Image (cartoon, rainbow, N blue to C red; front, side, top):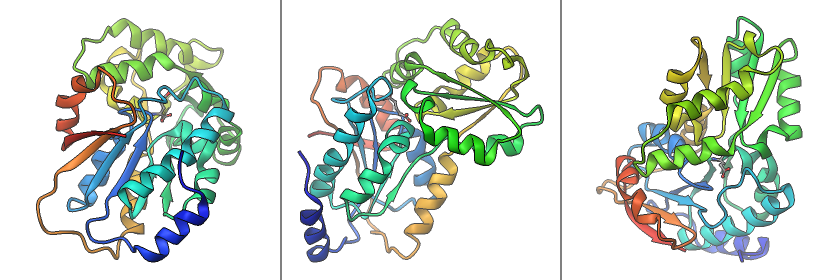
Length: 281
Ligand code: DGL
């Protein structure tokens, strides 16, 4: 699966991106839609392909070895298919584990997603912040480094929840959600020793902003939920600031890596993010 670096480089040398070349936004599932929305707000004429690796979902319970082996090869294949001018890895799990490997493998500009510990620490008055991510993300040395660099004077507590990722997917399929589940998941963080002081929670998985209102409603006290999606959008727009975009109306597409039976249930949710077409790999 995927293209070797030399093949991608040769392709890049012969086929410069055209005005029709899209921004490719990538995640294991629908989480990257939380990043798509602010990108579209800043770049309304940019063609977008949204790629959901539902064949690999969920990433958060996979090993580092699996993720590092899977994502550069898959993105190489997607780059060959769509000739994107830029790829946004709209996934904390993939970015904190495989960003360097992807950059080494592809000659396409890559924007990654990292847990928003810096803005959370800048904002916290209690100097206690929570990091809510996937199991894989919260155990990454990358998170240790962010905490040491930007939140050295804070207590930083972490909790991984695969269930919250599933709940965000269920919301996009239009399924009813149990409010008690959100309270229970938050308690995994707030119930830890020192958790009662937390005033800011980093949503360190791109799925989680999709259920931020449910989290806020379930929180036992006012808590700020912080994520990095606006910063990712600004970075993307800055990198593409010299690009001329097509004038004609766009029909943006979602791509799934497996043609499973549940894809149709996402159609309405995807349409709300302006994704009218669905393709499979
Ligand atoms: N949305 C992804 C993230 O930001 C991962 C969800 C998953 O597949 O576990 O980490």
